[in-house]
Length: 125
Figure 1: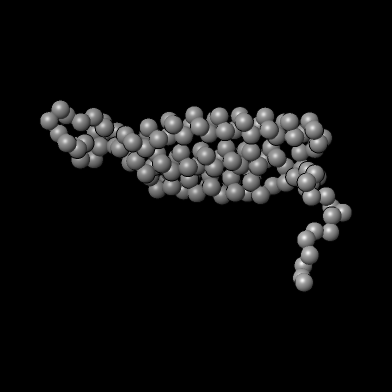
Figure 2: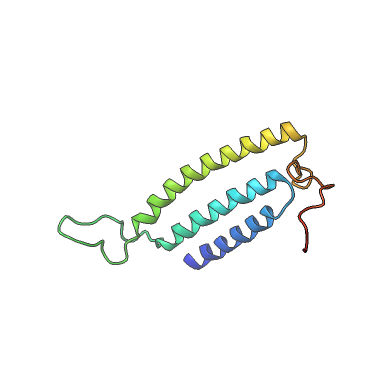
């Protein structure tokens, strides 16, 4: 099961990189969301996926039983889901405000700080 999920993580990373290299803000934000989901799936896969032994320790044990799934990646994923959702909501509001002010979602047309007519810094001395 883990090799298939590792391949899916690679597909998530490749698709998110492709989306983030776009010129449209919405595609970039979807790429960021896909990257977060890929990282969450990577953490979930790293924690071993098994149904045989639950990650519950007996009272007299110092370590979980052999072959048990690790509960720490699952807790990290729950935290990461909340953080990534709030981050995505903030970025969507920021992109919407930029669209309202500038009238476009193309990153090349959003060059307010560095206009195209600006010659730029000197190239030599």
